[in-house]
Length: 130
Image (cartoon, rainbow, N blue to C red; front, side, top):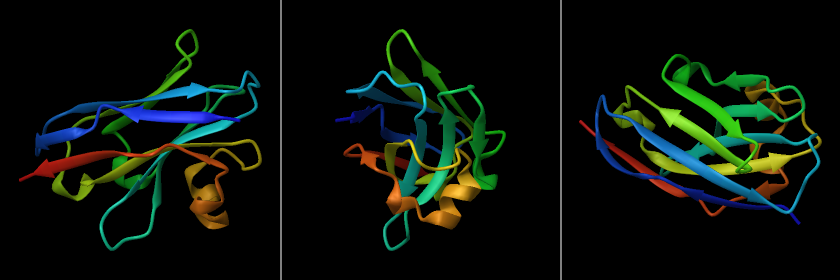
């Protein structure tokens, strides 16, 4: 059973930075697609960035390209999301997720249905004030 535990959320002013971490346990298979997703109040959950454990390829939502970076520390089995130039519209609950079945690209996962990702963390809140 894959378990995901997020940390690192908080409140920051616009233009600031935060780094989210997702501690991963319960698997050693390198075939997982790992990703960060977010959900703002009254909105659907959306993909932010994904990391392909097989080859290290990454994919980002257009809204965060150039501002966010997803990475994985294999020694710590931890997925990170470095967020910079934060905007008030980045305010949301951020979730870490994993799945073996999907093509590991944000657009593909959006098209198939974000909520079909198999494993989810509990989420960490990010609030950006103007």
